[in-house]
Amino acid sequence: MKPYPTDLSPFPTRVRLMLYAKGIDGESVTPHGFHGDTTPKCEYEEINPMGRVPTLVLEDGTSLPESEVICEYLEDAYPNPALHPSDPADKARRALAEITTALGYLEEFIGEAEKISGSHCLGSYRRPAH
Ligand SMILES: N[C@@H](CCC(=O)N[C@@H](CS)C(=O)NCC(=O)O)C(=O)O
Image 1 (cartoon, helix red, strand yellow):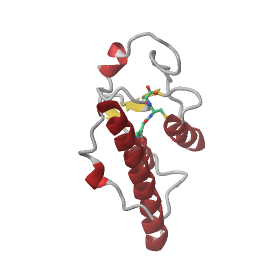
Image 2: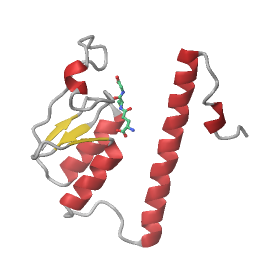
Image 3: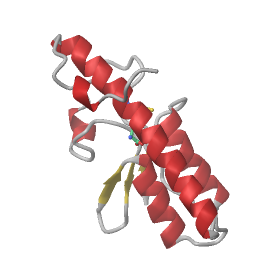
């Protein structure tokens, strides 16, 4: 398998930690076009059309984007050592943490999209301010 991370990025780091903890050796490739590298991302976008890191490319060529999806795959494909909880309540807490993080990220993403487009049409997806 081939992971595509970049250094110092949080989402690839969670995948890197998981690979390390499970003792999986991957032939890691750092894609161009990130962190000040002005090389166009087009080559990497053939692997991950969203142009974000990380991606995990499996032996059969399947390309998995999204750190959570990759971590789920690694946990299922390499169950030892188990890194996800087995207790139902702990599983629910983990799922909640994941959803909360994803929603926070989405909110930030929508805010950036609104700034760029000058539109507030996405505002109805926001959580109410407290
Ligand atoms: N939801 C995605 C988020 C991935 C993401 O946003 N990664 C950042 C780096 S941490 C990225 O690729 N940003 C685009 C860029 O730096 O050009 C995941 O969990 O994998």
